[in-house]
Length: 351
Ligand code: TYM
Image (cartoon, rainbow, N blue to C red):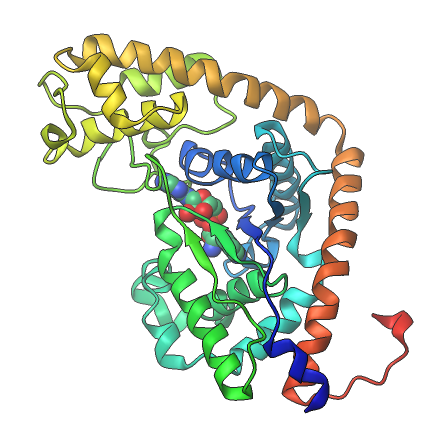
């Protein structure tokens, strides 16, 4: 079709997109694996779009009042961590209809077998897969739509999202192939740095997660200074001193985790941490880590509390972000519908 031809010659400008679910509070894992890196991408001058994925959150039941609060608190967490809602676009997913609409197209592109292989669905649905929502199963197609609605090229995430991003690439490639276009970019996952997988403070083989029943396993961005220090002092470790190089951490997941957390918080490499603390025991390292964590996280938590006092301002920011996001996503959706053969003759005022 003539009006889709120029699309195949399209070049994709660098554009960063990422999202966080407003289900429960933010953890140190979210901060180091995602938020801190979102800020770096913004400060590097790239076009950055960040989303509170509230429609992903409702793939498991959420109390409506708590969901509203968690979404606003997450917005506060983004801003307190350094996201500037003027330089970046910051919004909640459900305010931009292109996400759900494109997800439907992708539901028709993705194959059942692809989705059945998603380890996160298997983990979340557990033994009760028959009882999981259809939304939970189709979660990754909505995630692909989040990214592709903006023709985003780079997606900073933690390690646990790698498989979802591979699926996003597969969906984009299949769409392009099925319709003979180069309409969707093949996105680059950006999984970099010392903290792409922050582990539980109680078990160095498990990911730090907001859904872990033990609050001692994680640091929440809303924890006060005493709680942060106490959780790190009580973090599980082994009796050995820290080694002087990374090889010495190979069989020591808890020690490695704390070294990685230190490195990510201090913006240095794990090697540099070991150059400083190698040979010292946890009696010396843990208090230093606790001081560093309190120093970096307390201002964020204080700023979140302050921002949450003005909910109207948060809502204004989300509304403004949604309008800017919509302005980018809607024309891409319209082109996509056209490629697929869906007729759009409604008045332009409707879009
Ligand atoms: P979510 O809400 O579970 O987590 C948000 C981000 O935090 C990262 N993360 C971690 N990183 C390091 N260590 C940890 N322990 C840790 N825990 C969480 C996650 O990798 C993620 O980057 N499906 C996504 C949300 C999403 C999305 C998107 C992301 C929806 N659409 C489009 C990118 C692009 C999720 O559930 O993230």
